[in-house]
Amino acid sequence: MNTSSSTNEPTLAVFTKNRLNPAYAAARLGADRVAARLGARTVHYVPERPDHVGEQQALVDKAIAARPEACLFVATDAEAMIPYVQRLNAAHIPVFSFVNRLQGGEWVSFAGADDRALAVRIANHLFAHLQQRGRVLVLAGTHGSISGRDRLTGFAEAFAAAPDITRVADIAGEFLQDAAQREMTRFLARAVPFDAVLAANDAMALGVIEAMSAAQSVSNRSLCPIVGVNAVPPAIDAIKAGTMLATASFDAMKMACLATEAAVRHLRGERVPREIILPVEIVDRANCAVWDRPFEARELPVWDEVIATK
Image (cartoon, rainbow, N blue to C red; front, side, top):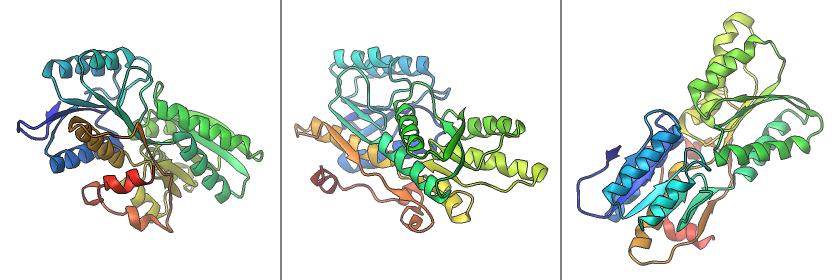
């Protein structure tokens, strides 16, 4: 747990799943930046063991004891965290869901994206690059993650519409770069042929690149087309370098920014939307310049502009 300031202004408890996925680092930064601009403070609650349900449950109890004015929440496990969201409800702490929509309890507003539609779009982009023919390996996310579930649903929809694209296998990459590198290395040792990789987030795509690059010196195999989701800066670098074909912009920083502003506005007595869904954008070498900057330098969303489109 860490705190962004030491003022007496409204406190927002921010729950994210781990410190390894750059998308969550971006989310925490976005919450900090918007809270500072609006005169609030953030306290971050992050499990030391990535995505650990028991640790997040204990952190909820710790946050309730600290009595924040509001809570921003990404659940480590959609089902397991329902009773703990309900504990926040019972403590009369308003909850704001972001990135992964909460599956139980009450929340004021959700800021996120359509994971299924996003997955269909990035899969179709890869399939078009393959000219609708080839063998594709899938890197799946964490069990219990709503984003992971919905992205696999979108991938399945895209595969069903592409009869000459074969789904070779699914690898559990846990949404983490190290895990994806480890599991991809094991898969490569099996010498199963494939033509491209469809990863459910950028961290896993980057892990695949590391594994395949390490294997090149042994097998002389070149990198295949690889796509991911998130548009984090390392993925943009990989796209520019030609080691990654494309990514989809699932902007966790913007989602956290919007959830933070929704929380502050709610505390001020303003009405906020029940949900704020960001549009799907595919990022490749043709347009990646827009995303080619560190999170600290990326523009914050303008509330009135985003809400005007809803």
